Image (cartoon, rainbow, N blue to C red; front, side, top):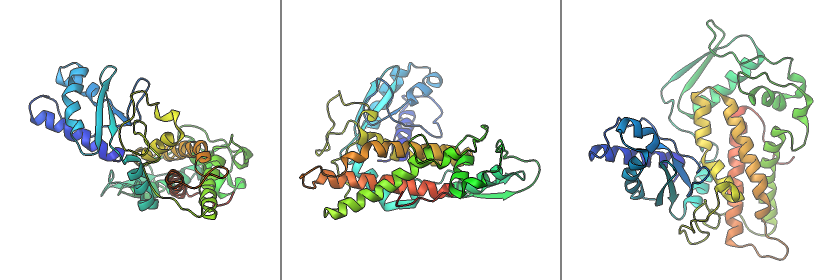
Length: 345
C-alpha cells in the first residue's frame, strides 16, 4: 500500500465514522500520512484525529479511538495504535515493502505521477531572467506529472519571479548550472560557484548522481555473481518482521534506525514530494527529496551484495531490487529537473 492509497484509506474511515453518526465534522478533502515521529511506531502515522478534534467538539484521543478500528479493518493494514495526544500509527500487512519496490520498478519514470492538477492549465508569466526561465522550463515537466499543463510566457503581471542568480551560471555547464538554480527555494539567492562541480560528499548534486551511478554498479556486480534483483519481503518497512510478513515487536526502531527502512520511506514519500513540487510550483522540493533518497541509498548500499564467500540469498535479491528502485526514482527525478543521470561516475 502506497502513502497515497493509505491516505485514501484513512479518508474513507473518516467518511464511515461521519456516516455512522459517530463524528459530526466536514469530511476533509485530503488526509496526510508520513513516517512516525518521536514516540511513534509502525510504518506510517497521521494527525487526522488532532485536525478533527476541534470541529468534532471531542478530545483528539476520542476521535482517534473512533477511527482506529475503521482503519484497522482495511485490507493491507495489520495494526493501528494511538500514541501521544492522538496520533494514529499504522502498521501495514506483510508484503508492503515488496509491493512498493515492485510498483516503482513497474512504473519506472512514471512512478509518483498523479492527477492533482488533472485538466488544469497553469499559466507561468516570467520575467526575462535566466533563473526564472529555468524554473519555468522545469515546472512544465513537473506539472505534467500531475495531469496538468503549464504554459510559459513573458508577460505582465509576472507570477513566477525567483530571486535572480548573482552571476551567469553557464560556465558551470548544463547540469551543475540547472542544479544551482533549482536546488534553492525561489526566495533564496542561488549560489553560483565551482562547489557544484566538486565530486565530494559536501556537494548534494554529486551525492544524487553518485548514488544513481552506484545503483547501476550494484546491478553489474550482482550480475557478475549470477543473480538479479527481485522484490521480496526480505527488506521490510519498520514494524514488519523480515521474511514472515508479520508485525515485529513493539520495540522496532524508527525507520531512520534501519537503512533499508529509511530508503523505503524515502521512495514511498516521492509521490508526495512530486505533487507538492507541482502544486506549489517549487522544483526545489523535488531536488531536496532526491538528496534524501540518495543519502538513504548510500547508507544502504553496503548491505546489497554478499560478503566474502557468502552465497546470494533471497535477501540479496530483494535488497538489489530496492537499490534498483532507488535508481529509478533518482533517474526520473533528475530527468524532470533537466539534469543527466550517468550510469558511471
